Length: 198
Image (tube, rainbow, N blue to C red; front, side, top):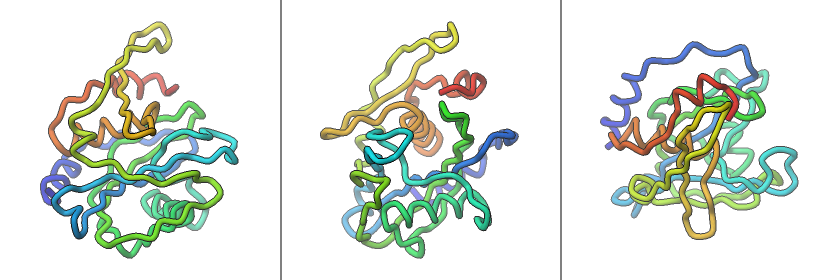
């Protein structure tokens, strides 16, 4: 699995960066002990205390800050701050092309294996950290038709236990699954990237 994901991510043609403010998010795959046979992906639910996306499911991560070497480092720094991820336990696999958030932030996803058991501790920005089996994400996407700028677009979602993965996080998840595991979860990512408003 690891070599296959790396090879597929290396083949991606990077999109030219925008002039927008940038953020890095971390798609962490639990890959140790029992998770080697059944990997799970880390998600967070944002707390009511944050000014944007409160209550929504997201990947750990955040905006680039001066001092960050690159956006991958941003994603790890923010993951450490938000959920106490031990960044020394992460094996980097690669990155996906960015998507633009509804707040006009260029969100760049980075994928890594988490190779040791973690003691997740949520900071004030996070209400809850949870994981979803990779197999569930691959096989249980729901499709929705919505209208964006007079164009019908398909977006996915997942419902796992009492959590709904929707919006930008669901689009990133679909891109991750389709790119790394040769699946076809319907998501009009190219249209959404062109419109820069999701």
